[in-house]
Length: 332
Image (cartoon, rainbow, N blue to C red; front, side):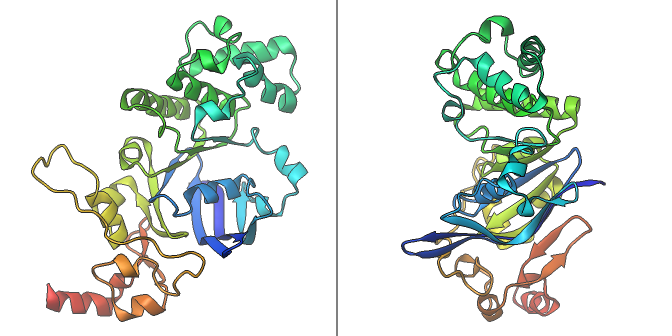
């Protein structure tokens, strides 16, 4: 499949009064054209920092992309000037932020905010912009669009505001859409509607999507592939079926075990004990070692290399080493 985005060895740091936080530490992944890739992990693992780095929205200072490449259609965004990135954002790559209320300007009408990007980037007339805005509102399921264009964000419900944020992100027909926790602030009924909307939009436009979330229910609904992130690193990647039915990393298994299942009423949830490592001075080895029930001495000292389970399923874990497999076979 054609790759629309390739992130290679990405490092992002933040200089603080307490020292340098190594927020993203050598992240590698790719996104195929027309697919949805979910990046999952607990809060603080580096998901949103990674998405902001792709958009070149890391504030410098205190943040900085210190290494790596962000190849969008073969061009390295990490080398683009801010002026050049302004011509990319909202046109070729768009982003949906977590809170729809803070993403919208309360002093401007919905129509003004919908048409703003289109008129700035596409240089269309006011009438053409209005026609496109109405078309996008129809696409995201807003009724009476001509009247709604004149209204303000406070006159919309939370679900409707999120639909408008999605419409704003898509109005210039980008090739890549990054959705950062797009359903977190919504109740489960509206959440289901928004997820169905994403599926509808991808089917009708062919847009490629990166979904940032910690909600595995959302992932199960719309993702094609999943990248599991922990302590600034991607530790396992695979298709949705591979991650849900054949997880290989102990952290991935821990995430899945901590999710309630309606088909297993008597089963107790299993929390992941401990806390993530300090990213002011991250460990040399596997960052999950202190919380891992299978940790070995080598886990503390050396970070594990990629182990290929299948062509699409990869994991960074010393348990995939043949010596570890032999040892486990004698114990279990």
